Length: 477
Ligand code: FAD
Image 1 (tube, rainbow, N blue to C red):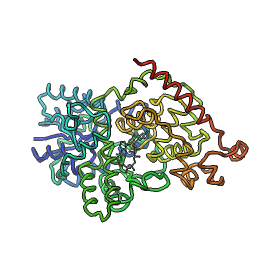
Image 2: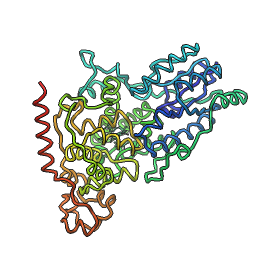
Image 3: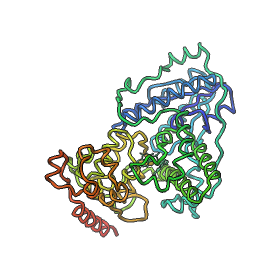
Image 4: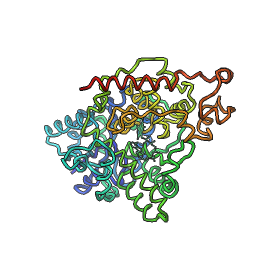
């Protein structure tokens, strides 16, 4: 009996709950990935992300071959293409892992309907990408958490599952069946360029399961031990850079968790333990936002807090463009935006700085900034990105009402030697550190270096934002 295993955000054969469940039922497990135009043709797609996706699929194909099976590639609307292929191949079932995003719910519901009609089996709501399901973690009154700290308290107190078995032997399609699959639409894996995405940018995050596992090991051996301190400084390579692997499920979250427990066990000081704990808390932030998206899909559309639902954000194309291009005249903001434009990745501290600047200084609608991030990030992910933007805009679930980052104090604290600024804003390399971090570069010098004047005045904008905020707050009964 053939089971088709449909990969979505779980591009690996190790520690994959749905895939392991499929293998338990039959030896004939064949992988499937569907290049979905509903995703690939959206206007918030990033070339760097597609590039990573295709690379990881190529690696996954090799993994399947190494265990005796195949990964089939479809290109088309999955709600039709998948049931049709399963029918043609006379598959017993199609298995997949569940996802929190609204689009995924809509799509899966349709597919389930089509499979039922054809009498093909499936497993419903099999969770894989998170350590606890959204139903598992709730408040005393059985409601979803809307604040992180109590969520973390509950979430971290619960025992976590061990990694599940890697697919180690399977049976693929026969040559004759492969021929039928090809006629039914199965194609060669295209390159990102074939799909119209050209990415020749900077950061090399090697795609694929093996590379992600290596990265995890290296991080758990070294940087995790000083994560608490180092993670704040964008000029230090102090974070795991596993976000793309986690986003696409190129690495299993149970494996990640187990690695942190092992690191904890080997830890020799309280300091390293605190660091490991801090990293675990980031893994929990990821889940917090995924649970939030699952329970409150309206987050994807806009503000969570009433005060921000009809907030009079301004429209200013000039500000928006300057921010996107890293030409705001605020060195730390510009360094960060240029890092993202060039690498497809931005340091977390800087994501907070530029998102605060976008909303509190430029007074622009966070949804626009959120979208630009999606168009540029290798790890662009609806739940995490939306969570980060709502946190920065103060429109989300965060209990602190308004948080405004001062770019100068952020730079003074977290890029005190201006190493990060100098790396990403080369025209400012010769300027004294003091002026770089405070941003107090004279108009004359800016002109001479070809660096823009500040597009807004932080203090003034901050006052305007607060006034609007108070007005909005007052307007709500
Ligand atoms: P590490 O510091 O090593 O953290 C480990 C993992 O924990 C990350 O890979 C990620 O999966 C998770 N994580 C860490 N911080 C957060 C967080 N605040 N929220 C959710 N998960 C987290 N992360 C994304 O994965 N995709 C996004 O699209 C995204 N957009 C963001 C937008 C804004 C405005 C902000 C403030 C944050 C955003 N983040 C996003 C969270 C965070 O910046 C990145 O996960 C992190 O910088 C990735 O680098 P890393 O893998 O080295 O992280």
